[in-house]
Amino acid sequence: MLSISRLLPCLYRVYTGEFLDITLCSTVKAKSNPQDHARATEGPCNTPKPGVFDLINKAKWDAWNALGSLPKETARQNYVDLVSGLSSSSDSSSQVKPEADRKQSGYETLVVTSEDGITKIMMNRPAKKNAMTMRMYEEIMLALKAASKDDSAITVLTGNGDYYSSGNDLTNFTDIPSGGVEEKAKNSAILLRDFVDCFIDFPKPLIAVVNGPAVGISVTILGLFEVVYASDRATFHTPFSHLGQSPEGCSSYTFPKIMGPAKAAEMLIFGKKLTAAEACAQGLVTEVFPDSTFQKEVWTRLKAYSKLPPNAMRISKQMIRNREKEKLHAVNAEESSTLQERWLSDECMNAIMNFLTRKAKL
Ligand SMILES: CCCCCC/C=C/C(=O)SCCNC(=O)CCNC(=O)[C@H](O)C(C)(C)COP(=O)(O)OP(=O)(O)OC[C@H]1O[C@@H](n2cnc3c(N)ncnc32)[C@H](O)[C@@H]1OP(=O)(O)O
Image 1 (cartoon, rainbow, N blue to C red):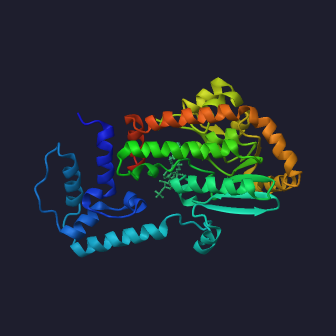
Image 2 (cartoon, helix red, strand yellow):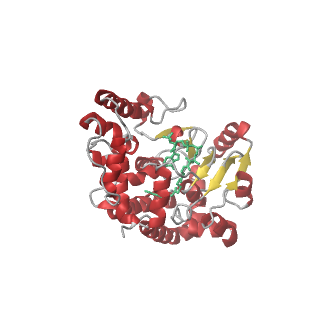
Image 3 (cartoon, rainbow, N blue to C red):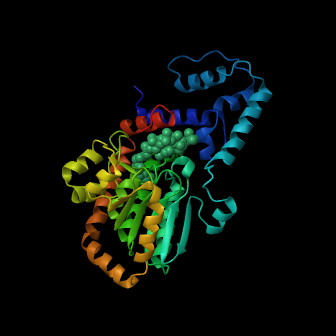
């Protein structure tokens, strides 16, 4: 029998159009319509239907046949329109900074500013609920490294738009390298470990301004922040079992410490979504503000904090955190290698396929 782990790369390729000879960048692949491409290059479906066990050719044939008698030129135009539409519509939102500004800051997925003693790192993919792409992980690491050396006193992580972040971008898993899913899982585990290490080692007070719902890794790393301010619209959700995955961000260690093992288990094993008030009662959130006054109240507070002597704040943070650092690095290493295995499991692959084929949402 064909296992899901062997079938998945085939399904990915059918879904992303690789078996139809589409040569596009990974983002476009994940969204392009393979049928239109086949129509555009081959004309109407004119070959016999493959047998039921010939999965790959059958999927290709079904996609091609579904187009019926669409003229070749129309199919080609639809295909071109779709591909061009993707590049112009991705991340479309009134709140996204203009292209020129983004390039100026040097970040593609973030807006990073530094003023009044505060470096603000804002995740900036509002149309995708600030889902974290590979690029965003890399850019957050770069921004944290820069913030650790700049003259700001405190550093803030927040999100643009209605979400704080929907966590890992599940399309990250569609970009399979030549070494296959095993290589993908290995590379992702290395990136995850480096990413979380940056938070563990960050020397200045780190503040999360949680402007809306937070999912997955955007929630788990909150245990590594000094202060978490949340809008009353925010929710906190770690649906790892639903996704066939396991905890990261050191949450398997920090959450039981913060909220006790029973409450941590409800979140990390059973995926219980907490309201901001509940997360505050459990100790994960420092304070909750009404959404209508959230930005004003939080930034007024942070501007006052940023005027405190920066060296004193750094030293106090070190005294609170340093005893734990070695432990946190060990936990991070263990969580990352456990996830590397989880990503290759049928449970995880099925969950991701269900999201990508629009069969499941949280
Ligand atoms: C280096 C790798 C490290 C990995 C670390 C391990 C991390 C684990 C996690 O973070 S687990 C959590 C993963 N996140 C999810 O499972 C969330 C999936 N998203 C959803 O369920 C929903 O999108 C939602 C509930 C967050 C929001 O629903 P809704 O309000 O109805 O909005 P849309 O679904 O229409 O979203 C708009 C737009 O954004 C795309 N999108 C949102 N979240 C993600 C995501 N996490 N990954 C990929 N894409 C996402 C969504 O598909 C829509 O796209 P579209 O407009 O249709 O093109």
